[in-house]
Amino acid sequence: MESGVEAAGLPQAVVGVVIALAGATPGDHRCAALRSARRDRVQTSLNLALGSAMVGIGLTIPAVALASVWLSGPLVLGLGATHMVLLALTVVVASPTVVPGRATPLEGGVHLVLFAAYLELAINP
Image (tube, rainbow, N blue to C red):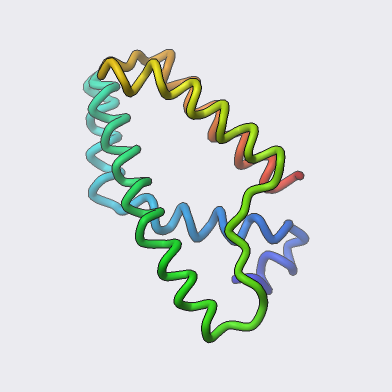
């Protein structure tokens, strides 16, 4: 995967994004989240998406750490300054959405915009 990312001229951060997306979006949870969003159940959709992401991260990081034993190169799990700011912004924005247990389509849209900003900055740092 790393050689393909290099051949495409993309930064190495894209490898992490691809791995995280593959691990954080299992088919069943993604389909259930989309069905809930279509039925205007934004909170259920958000809960499914966040839960799926937490499971994916909880399984992906240990798997990558274990694989790094056999792979050459350093294992870097840190975030750059730009991504740390996006993470902090996401936590601040998510607090009023997740804590009361009510999410609106506008709040869901804000989360999608933050995700798009993360992807854009991962591809074009």
